[in-house]
Image (tube, rainbow, N blue to C red; front, side, top):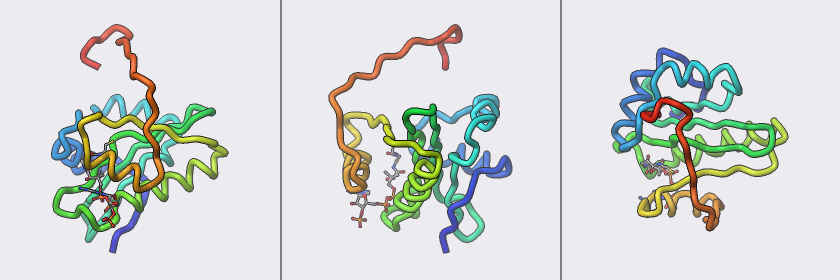
Length: 138
Ligand SMILES: CC(C)(COP(=O)(O)OP(=O)(O)OC[C@H]1O[C@@H](n2cnc3c(N)ncnc32)[C@H](O)[C@@H]1OP(=O)(O)O)[C@@H](O)C(=O)NCCC(=O)NCCS
């Protein structure tokens, strides 16, 4: 049975492996430590038979919620695990009074776009702009 629960540090290696398997950058421990000083209840994992099978990282800036780094173990996809993770995260955003949730999808990621649209997330024409504050590797 799948259990959705908050991340704890013993999950880190499993979560890093999931992000790597999904082709995502792995957030280093120091970045996660900083994230966990704010809304730690928005960093969720899906546990299946004692192992981490999915992960999602939410943030809330007081105006908008953001969903980041959703990934499900390739061996357990199309079983509703991402839907459960996002459903629990949305409930937690709502409990915080968050009125709207945003996320970014790579334009060539057909699977991700289909998934998000199935859950009611609609594309917007905005273009992401970014600038490193010092260290250009982050
Ligand atoms: C996208 C991802 C998180 C979906 O996880 P999942 O647990 O398989 O998703 P779910 O089982 O909850 O899927 C819910 C619905 O999304 C849609 N969907 C999910 N995967 C899909 C696919 N490969 N093709 C088409 N539709 C898909 C379907 O409508 C699906 O419902 P259905 O299975 O009843 O048809 C997973 O494929 C993944 O980790 N991909 C790599 C990382 C990634 O792209 N993350 C998103 C970054 S923005």
